[in-house]
Amino acid sequence: MSNRNYWLDLFTGVTWKEFLAAGGEVSGFRESRWSAVQKIKPGDYLLCYLTGISRFIAVLEVVSAPFRDSAPVWKDEDFPSRLKVKVVVVLDPETAVPVSELRDRLSMFRNMKSPMAWTGRFRGSPAKWSAPDGEAVLDALVEAKEHPKKRPVDAAKLARRPKALRAKIGAVTVPESEHQPAETSDSSKEPREHEEIQWLLLTLGSEMGFDVWVARNDRGRQINGKRFSDLPRLKSELPLQFDEATNRTIELIDVLWLTGNAIVAAFEIESTTSIYSGLLRMADLIAMQPNLNIPLYLVAPDDRRQKVFDEVNRPTFRRLSPPLFEACRLISFSELRKKLKEAGSLVRYLKPEFLEELSESCELE
Image (tube, rainbow, N blue to C red; front, top):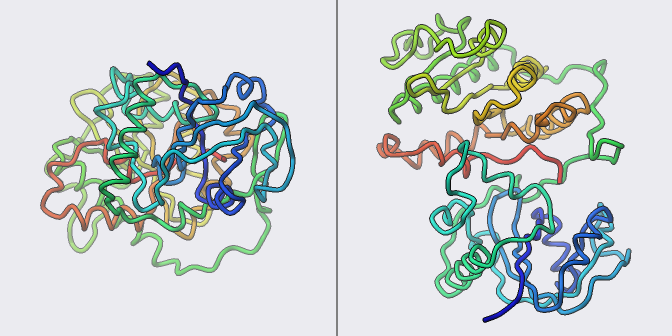
């Protein structure tokens, strides 16, 4: 029986390309991870995971003791805590294995306290994994290599390179000046697009069998002659399970999915120029209910994706417990529309977990 250990090794699409371009022989981690890297031994396996698209792309075998080096490999950071490696199995982004397809094989998906609890296992590397979990990933990648299955990849997620700098509290963004000229936009388009996405989320939740809630001040809205208030599973009142201040915040969230008295998912749609209203509601909710285990989603146009990342990672929001970037995930308008079109009449058979594949982390890499 092998005594090798398995370790998670996180990459973005960009840092993975840079790793391959440099020869694919050295994997690196931040200086702050040196003590963890020193525990990795020759013969151990690194489970390579692409954060933007939530897929396992390779398994690497460690072939050296840990060492420090700042020779250029990656453009944005040195990752000086390094290991020499060789490829055991490698795929490409299109044939890489989505973590959601390993739901029945990995321990992180068992007895979860919330639907997104598994994401906590992908917030830093290297991280030691159990042998059964490591072997499950290895087996899945070997199988995918022998029988490749192509899945579309969002190019924007693969190319993600957030603008960030280091501060005492960690990586933070440098927000643009609030006094810069406003972005040009069709002022009549934003309300219509906001209502369209609201309607899509409300009808999706309803067709999946959930009760739904629309922000109290939006109940009178309509789109293409269809009134929000006419939706058959639309709740007229929220369950009174929180204090008055929390309930006032929750009732203004754009869309909620509910089952009984439990909130299954919360969505804030950020199609307007400022972005702040929804972020502040999410932040208030976290501040008032830090132990609340509700999946929170920010839904935004593709061209506002970077703006959302920049704002979610402001120092104010990073100081929350948990930080806003950990509590929220991003869904793009185009991805939502595309997935619903693909699902067609099968929408009613979807489970909330499909939002994991649809969304992406807001954390700076």
